[in-house]
Image 1 (cartoon, helix red, strand yellow):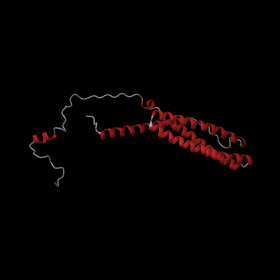
Image 2 (cartoon, rainbow, N blue to C red):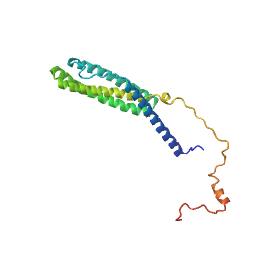
Image 3 (cartoon, rainbow, N blue to C red):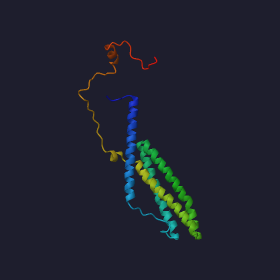
Image 4 (cartoon, one colour):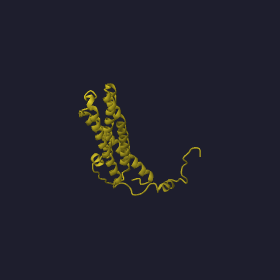
Length: 196
C-alpha cells in the first residue's frame, strides 16, 4: 500500500534529497580523483622573472573576470529556469569569485610597487598572494560548473512502474479492526497502559 499522506510525502522527499546529495558527492569525488590524476602545471614565483610578474597577474586577472562573467551568465540562466537550488549555489560561488577578484585588485598595486622598487621579498609575497586568489577562482569555477551539472547525466532516464501481488486482499484491515475484536468476544479494546 502506498502512503499518500502529507508525512509520507515528506518522508519520500527527504529520502530523494538524501539520495541525490549522496549521488552528487560520489560524482564529485570521482571528478576530484580524475583531476588529481591529471598533472596540472602550476606557476610558482621562481618560474616567473620579477619584471614579468605584473603582466602574468594582468593576464590572470583578465581570465578571472571572464570566469566571473561566465558564472554570471550561468546564474542568469538558472534564474530564467527558476531553479532555486542552482540560483543559491551559483550566487554563493559568484560572491566568492567577486571577493577574490577584489583581493587581486587590492594586491596588484603592492606587486607593482615592489617590482618598481626592486624589492624581491615583497614581490614574492605579493605574487604568492595573487596566485592564491587565482587558484581559488579556478576552484570556484569548477564548483560553479558542478552547481549546474545535468542530473540526467548522473542519474540517467528513469521509469516508474507499480505491480500489485494478486494474492493481496483488497480488504483494508484498519477498517475492520473493531469487528475483529468483537468477533473474539471482547466488548472493549484493551488498554494501552497497565495503570489504566
